[in-house]
Amino acid sequence: MSYDVIYIDPEGEETAVAHHLDDRADAADLARRTAVERGAGRMLLPGSSRPSNCVCVVPADTRPAA
Image (tube, rainbow, N blue to C red; front, side):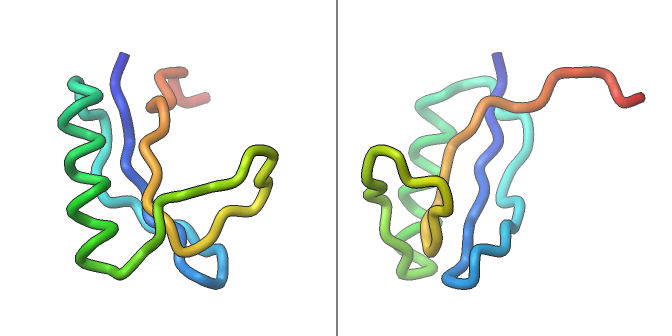
């Protein structure tokens, strides 16, 4: 499995930081460093459907493009 790292700004807009990182620990480390650089929070409450001002590690979309 590979992972993407995304930044979600205070307005809820997503910006890609990295794509298809193979190591989850590397993706998490990059997310932590990016959060510090951008002054983003990392804590999300359970059930949050619209996170903002955060950096997230998400499974990469491995589906072939249609």
